[in-house]
Image (cartoon, rainbow, N blue to C red; front, top):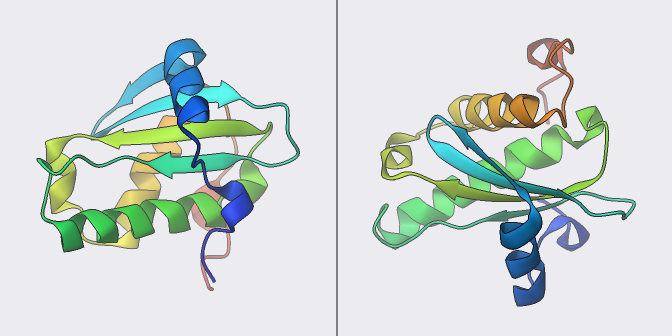
Length: 126
């Protein structure tokens, strides 16, 4: 089961709005653009330039971030649109746990996920 289409950012207007008016957070290997969306669901986009890695690697990184986002939606305290822009160093990302820890640390910085919640103890079986 992947990230539902309703939880994906796809429109050019959405991207430009989020990048212009959203909050920009630097977090290690990624940059997050975050904007509250006023909807009943959160949405995600992962944008990886060709300079970062070859095609298969870029798509693997996107899948890992989407899965981490999907599995942690229940911990969000408000509905937001999130754009993830990874740095070149993210090409070394090789497993789900790394992607999840990078994403969660960024979301905690934004306040979307409460820092007090122990997400690591959540059920990881899917």
